[in-house]
Length: 231
Ligand code: HEM
Image: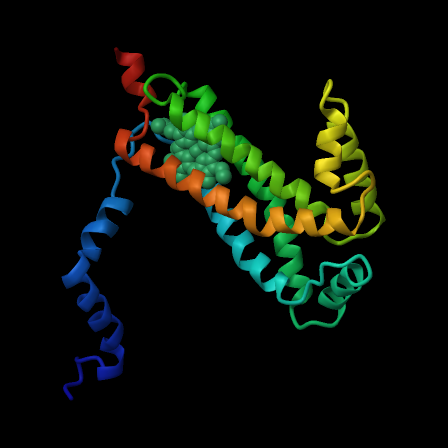
């Protein structure tokens, strides 16, 4: 082996990549996904990307937490105490998940504000905006459903009050409340319902909406507010 040549095991990833690339054109897909023209006046165009980054952090830490979290009224709080006090780095994973949840909401709202300030919601980007509104609701929904999972006093009463607000909707308010709680009161059924929404329905919908968001953005390119000023 020459001194300049990398050892044969180090070439394995390249060989695997090359095998797939030759058959399904990976380079083309990656180039199309990553290489995009960014307007010169772009100073805050990273906010959507940061929101997406926090979603990935939430997915990774959420999967780790789900390995030890027990979703029953008897065991949920104790499993949180176990994660925080006994599990190696459990406190870190849970804290990153909690901070990540808040930061994802903050950056989603900052991203939306930049869209408003730069008028990037205007024609032809109305659909991107509408899909974005869906993403905002899902992001807030993650926070609302996740809050109940530790099953402590704060979680219990926040959900009691939160679902009570839904009851204020005229005519169908009571039905919405019972649908959310799985009955008249916050109970074991509310916990399993919220967990299902938090771990399955919300992630699946966010991935679907986000894929659509990104496909449209790639198709249309990013809005250039400077060009609009010059028109
Ligand atoms: C989970 C939440 C969201 C993620 C991960 C996300 C992600 C992104 C990304 C990566 C971009 C391209 C780069 C950028 O402009 O920052 C983008 C653009 C855009 N987003 Fe979002 N977004 C989210 C929520 C929203 C919300 C709440 C709205 C508005 C209601 C929105 C409306 C738009 C629009 C109109 C564009 C096109 C901007 C342009 O052409 O200049 N997005 N989004």
